Image: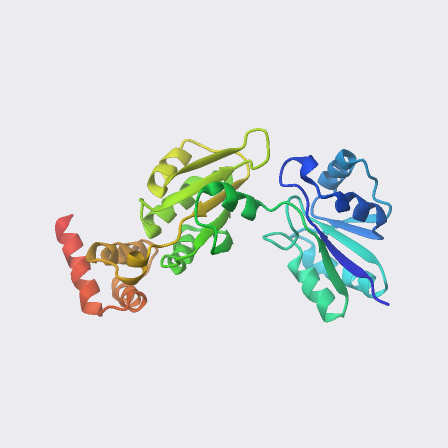
Length: 281
């Protein structure tokens, strides 16, 4: 018989939010794979439990090398519990590679549901939550960041991003460029912790606020594009989209052609919009 892989959700801030089953799974596991073994020890101490099995590290740097070892243990009948620093494993954290390998070997995969920064931020953001998409972390480089955001410029669903505090101002500035400075958003900081804060407002204002410096774990929730924005962009919006692409290093001719394709309008309309913007500057 094969073993079982348990994806165990961990608190995103307050240790008392840990699901009751988490302590039981840690105590019963043959092997615990943790993104940070030191943080796991602190959490286990807060829960009043001592893992009985072996504890190993499983993080981005050793994920590829350690996955075969854990998969072999699972195939041999072990109960392996996977935990990350916060939230559910494999959601912008290590885990997907191990889940895929376990499924391929016919190993049972289950989960201990726990707190989620994505769902918590959505719930408190004030943005529509009936339809949303999770975009994870944006690329570090500005050109790649703008390109990723352009892919979501016409997305009608609410968008959720993770971001580090030292890149937040740049990310919000890029969002204001691509989505427009008036697009409503919410920056959710230190959720469930002592200094929890939810800052709501237009992207342009939030970018200025973040430029002063922000600390803590960050989740950004952005309202999706309005129907008029997504389906019938005006000349100013067409010109702005071309300008964003040019700033990211794209040639104007290619930028005009791509914006025309995305908007479903003739290239001549986009070209005229760019010329009009240049004359107005």
